[in-house]
Amino acid sequence: MIEIIEGFEINKNDKSTRIVDIDISDEILKKLIFPFNKFDITALEYKPFTRFTIAKSLDDLSNNKLSKLLNKIICDRNTGCFTIKPKNLISKIDNDFLVKLSTAVAYLIGVPNHDSMAGKYYARFHVKHKDKSDSYLRKAYTNMDLHTDGTYVKEKTDWLLMSKLEEKNVKGGETAMLHLDDWEHCDELFNDPIGKENFIWGSPKSKNIDYKVEHPVFSSDKDGKAQISYIDQFPEPKNMDQGNFLQRLSDSLEKSKNKIIIELPVGNIIVANNYFWLHGRRPFHENKDLSRELLRIRGSFFKL
Ligand SMILES: [Fe+2]
Image 1: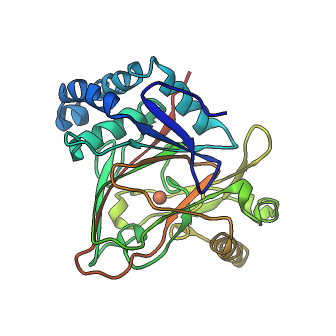
Image 2: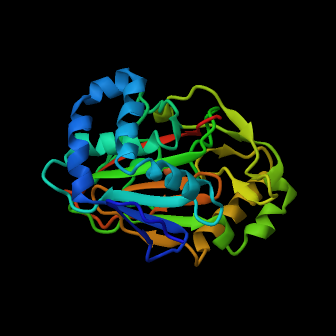
């Protein structure tokens, strides 16, 4: 059942009933401008408590119903994903506003991890025509295969948030999403003992992580259901069995017919449970003036 919160329009996503779309009305947005203006971005970066303050401002405008709804969606195995965005991009909504809104949404769910790529609790980055980086994140014309985040860090990555801040001359580059329970070969791969062996996970230089971690691809949740921690670029298979398992996994995920392809308009924030949702990106159509700016936050749930 979809809840009713005054000032928020809540609907099932038209591509998947597992994703809930939340539109924030102009009225709420206008009421956010004053509390958001209380802190500039530097204050948010330097003083973590200010992020809780703006999150509370947002939640208060829903009579504290929004935080309950977001947590319910993100923890429910049947959903686990929502989008939230300004219904209209009214004139006061600029990049700073969207950084603050993303921060507020994140802090209603949990505490962000330090993002080593950016050296802050969030990272902003561009995808452009030309790229010299060492990961698929900024390679516009290559498919970014389905994966989860945080595979190569020690911190727990329970959820991830992605916001679209800006877009110019973009065709393609849609977001691809796959829920494990919709994936045709989940049982087969989950029940393969190789997937429960420890794998070594490293990362390229740009990620600024100077250690490697070890963990399996699959684990079980409290009900015995599959959870995945996987990305194609970073595991370092140590034998033929592990190498072949990863290839089978990669092929099977990419071939899935149940992938959801969504276009996220500027201002849209998507948040997904990182244990049973995989995400990726389709290639962009070539354009030398192509530019997209994204923000990401990854973190853990609040500890009670
Ligand atoms: Fe990712």
